[in-house]
Length: 236
Image (cartoon, rainbow, N blue to C red; front, top):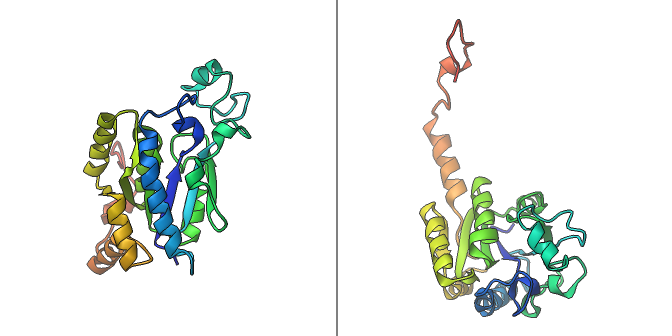
């Protein structure tokens, strides 16, 4: 059973190539690091699927019916081209495209979890921790981090395998995420861990917290919580 999943978010032509409709200016700087981390992950997956690889794409319908309301006008101004279904701009960059045995998830919003099957697939595979790469840090990386944290996944952001419009924006968002307990790691650090353990970085929060809760034998709510309120007393 896997404990980690390696996730690539929005590493598509239309977010990265020069002249692309929604280009993230520094996005391509993350690409060689994503390729390196992906190659190391695929290496430990040769014998068994130790670390599931998930490719998350943003696909829009050509009429704009599933585009965010805050991006619709920009999408329209570009002739409804930009990660549009079946157009080359929607493809992942060549160096990180899926291969047999990997998963693909389509999203239309910032978070990879919002109205997608990602949580369902990860829980079925026993994943406790997600390792995030891709673009861009303040939007889809951050949105996915917040939802993953809310869903009780441990989260690692590969700091050089993600990027944003500017280095300053990238670093500011990494700072915010680190401050809520998100783990930061470089691609080199991640690859070194894989050399020692094909299952990847440790993920111990859930088991430790569960054991502590069980060992305390504490009542989760006071007995009064279950008694009906009387008169004008408010229960909450």
